Length: 327
Image (tube, rainbow, N blue to C red; front, side):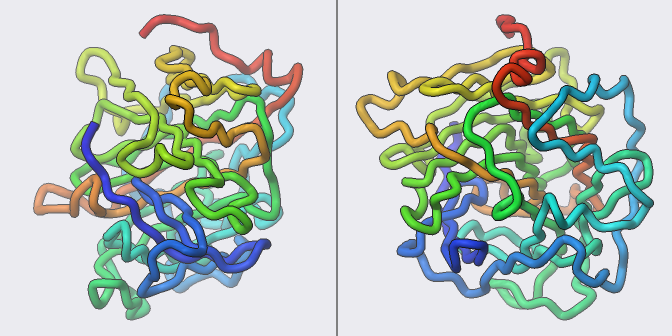
């Protein structure tokens, strides 16, 4: 895999201010690197920003979404076009990320994360700076959105699933992932991180699933990649990404096809930190060490279109689990 750098950013949530450091934009420990600008969590229902996000790009859902399984957490993103996400389920982070060298400023309200009125959440990355935002490199060049369930929902084990359509283009970096809820006490990477899916624009047909923990974080994360057959790209259509998570075992799948399973045996004696509660994160970054910055070929706006997020545990998780198949 490509070598990535570990980074950090700040984000206050219910455990207090903490720093993030992730290969591909992760939360980190309080003792990690200092940041030029802090990410701040704000209620999802905060006052709308000046320009509500709209589903302006062409995306046509193809194929029906799967049946809704009884879940401990579910957001089908049903609501009026232009409205913000449900603040009882999500909080929105604001700010930039110096240590990832991402280029975007994450905005509040529905400026870059809004429902489209057709059962989707649309996270829009734009080449703009409507409010004079300042980033680590000077005036910000892009805006986007990042949201999480910290303080609202955590899970320990189960079936974690999203159906989404990726953006397209050099520098785009969508992710659906989870962090240990004890990050405020133990820091990152001791908190653990489960990357359900990450995609970078220069690999339009490939997604990555990765574990990060003490001694195997950043470029040393434990994971694997999945590539669509026949030259298909993840920006062409919706796909379903999931992990099945049980004590001492996590399995990743795309569209029901299992492509990796990880257990403590994969860690060469290092600590397995995934038997505790985690919260969820959805974001669309622009640029950074791993994806590289946008270039002249990148068209804006770009959209991460999310059909749903569902988490089921116990017996309910069994009905949601994919049938194991060899990719």
